Image (cartoon, rainbow, N blue to C red; front, side, top):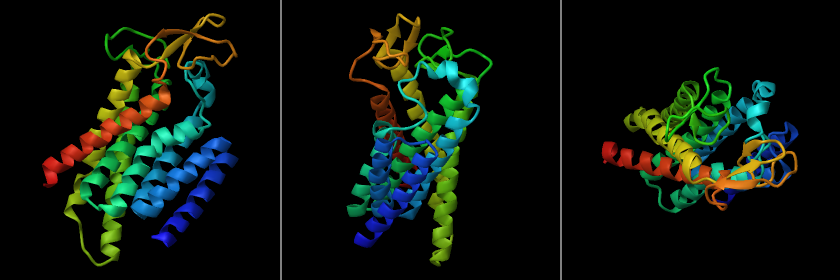
Length: 277
């Protein structure tokens, strides 16, 4: 296990350094990526680690896709596309915890929960990055009211389809990697791996919707009087302290993301228990 942890540390450090160089991670984000990557690679195994990389690479690329077109909506977000330690722990922290438990209790339901958790953060990222590009204004999940692009809890048809695509990617990669590992080791095809896309989609999409539900109801939302704009941050990007409109101060975007990944993981694990047990 020590050798595997060291390999995980080495790989996550290389990936974190690459992310910092490409301005996808801040300095603190590199620390978070190394911590999450070391535990996920070192304790979960190479399949767990490659799924984490799939999320990081795809979400980082989408964050920079048509970046200029997203600028107006990005003013509402608490943080930018350059992820800090809070964002890395919110998105990958649950996966690292599951890998830690899996190292001592290797149950297939824990891997299912991992699929749901990573499927959720990938689905949510894809929904956000594509959703703000929608030509049709988003509508609030709870009331159906038309809101401005980037508003917490707002959903679009484009974002919804993107959410499903992000979750499907995680499940498909998980199936492919599992079958490759099994065939290389001489174990033959693993039938349970066929269910991975379904687990990732159901868990990831549910978690993504839960993220939007929290954003529309109890997440802390603020208003900058200087710019006359809503924001998820108590300090707007212009530097002005924003006043709270609604929600809980402690329930920021990072807490919402972590909570959503927890829900996605629980849903995927529950579905796996029904299908496989």
